[in-house]
Image (cartoon, rainbow, N blue to C red; front, side, top):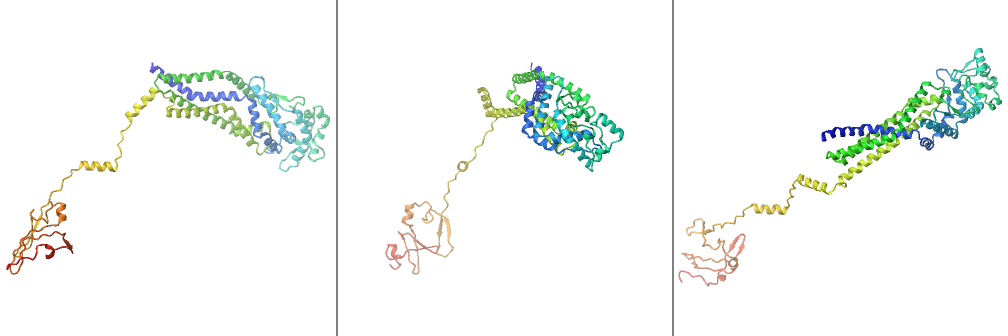
Length: 488
């Protein structure tokens, strides 16, 4: 049975470590991408509209290899008049709502919001000034229209994406462009301003909603690809609850199999949480870098909405907002990974502290610790070392040393020392009391020629020493009277 469970457990473990991060990041994207309120709050809190307004009002017509389109002149004149923070906020929020409704399936077709009436009024006020400013710019060379081009312009108007030319009267400043085209204020009131100015004008003064196919720079292939992606998005989003339930079931099965295999369930759970969170962090970073760090994405948006215009910091502003947009759509997965890694550290702390260990496991750990614990050798102290030294050594009592006897012969030979116990001076066995009483000398001296013979002399007083030699007592202190002579 264990051989059968082992490959199944390995398969489930790889599913949770490698596949689960991808699924969780996709779930976060599918939930947050249609959330219009999230995107609108992000733009509002980052002061995006004020920054964008200041940049768009300073937009300049860009000369691309000596070619200037009429559309770039028209967009520059409109932006200088209407690109206020409030107007831009209304434009962006309306388009965010329309896009999320289409993505979520509420609208069958993508519809863009474009306030045509505001654009028409701004163009009527600023177009002539913008044309004259560009005509006076020495860095931009605008050709003079031929008679055939003049006839076409008067009959059909200017083409937005074609190179612009000016009639000679307009180029010399004799009349304005609107005067040349005979466009008056009444044309603005009747909504005929753009129809007289632009060839096949996409703008409708009586409608603010446009389909992508009605815009001048649309692409049939791109629109078809977007519709296919939207259909796939709706299908996958409906399967999100089943995906989450499947991941939970896989996690429970992995823990149960670890239990049956006598493995630590807590360690298996921590391992799964750690590697799954690591995969989520990696995929989230990849999504953010792909969307926010793509120069092509930013430049494509700029050319799509503002063709032919040069804005200094517009790319930087859009890139920064793209980074925040990418983080918003993966935020659920990101914060889930933060929770996983935090739970992993909490479980590790509880495991080290023994919080989830029962009484039987604690007893087993104690027995294992006692068996594996090395025997400690006590540190020897000075007293213990001294006692051991005394116990190991054998004390030998001192042996009595032989007492030397000083014999001085009469013949004048040199003195000799012999072992004798009769001499009390060198007798080491005298007691303290005998020593205090003073040494007693019993000696017989035979003399001739006036030498005194002393039978015995007793000294009761302690002897004195001078210069390292013993001083003999006087005759008076001997207590035996006068010494006897031979005559007596």
